[in-house]
Image (cartoon, rainbow, N blue to C red; front, side):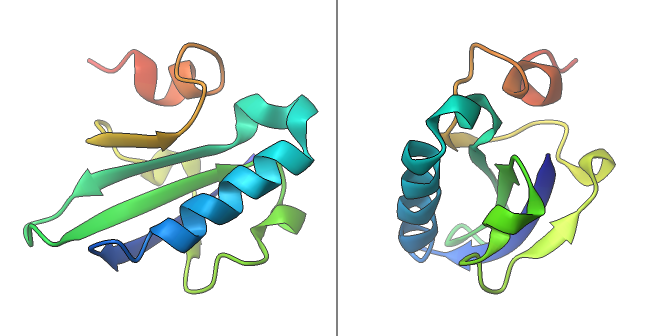
Amino acid sequence: MIWLKRRLAGVDYIPYMDHIQKLLFDNAPLYQEFIMVSTKTADPDIDDFYVGLPNAALAQGFDGFTKVAESDLPKAIDVVHVADAGKEPFQSRFGKRA
């Protein structure tokens, strides 16, 4: 699984959410590995978005996103945009934070 990050304003995330949903439907057996979450920043109009994908080949179309290590994922998230939040791998990364 790979992770990508990008800071976006307002509704600028919508094309990427649409894209990850299309990838999810096209790769349904891997659905649990498609994740999009965000965290708030100091600017109320800007959020940090994190996208999890099963492999790097699926990262095309996420222009401006940079690859981040799993260890760089936030400890807490503010919004779940796309994920099966009740299953792995979401639970191991975001579901049981202290």
